[in-house]
Image (cartoon, rainbow, N blue to C red; front, top):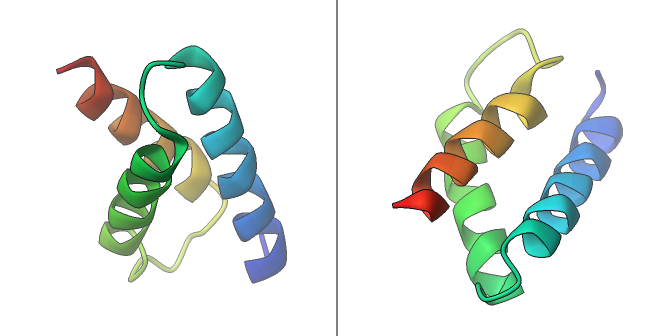
Length: 63
């Protein structure tokens, strides 16, 4: 997965999470997605980064 595809996929992650958690401000979700993405940024295999970010953010929003 290239950088453009990864960023596009992360945008879709934000969209899905904003729809699933309508009471959470979108900018808050975007910030958490950015934080989680930075934690995985050093990895060499990029294909699963958007899914891993989505799961981590979902876990944080459930708390």
